[in-house]
Length: 225
Image (cartoon, rainbow, N blue to C red; front, side, top):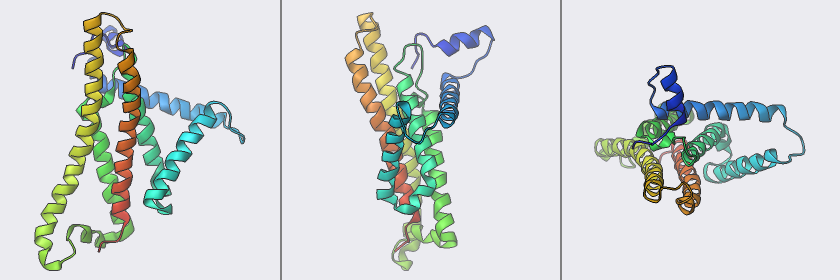
């Protein structure tokens, strides 16, 4: 999908650079989140107020929800879940600003995030079970292990495709609809109702990605039966 005007592309043109927009905007978001994190850590107060109160509400709510799914052991990987949620949410929302681009509207970004979840899932499995983690792929009946193993492998690979395509398809669709509305109406105010809906779906898609990641992590930590 071609965007009419991207601010970072205009900046790149002055320096004769040719970096894909999903890369430049992903790095921009990472720098913004890193800067906000450093700023928040310096101004953190014992009694939260203002923006700190809002962020603590979001983070604590997400952490407690995750613990309900994974148990207390899940707190160990909450930094990944919290970071993934904030990064994906910001990537989804930034494309709603004229002149900016959603990195998650590019399949390379969503695939990278899905692969991070995939690798971390099996890292946790090996960490908690060691060599016995292989039992997760062999099924409940030893005699049928040669049949269950390829099926389980295909199922785990399908998780990557599911995470990748779900996030990419929804965000790509949102951006495409907004651009079409702008071109048809000729005004930036025309797609406002759709933008309000896009804000909601952007948050939902970030939540779904992290929710599925939590479930995969919890499954890898469980003992195979």
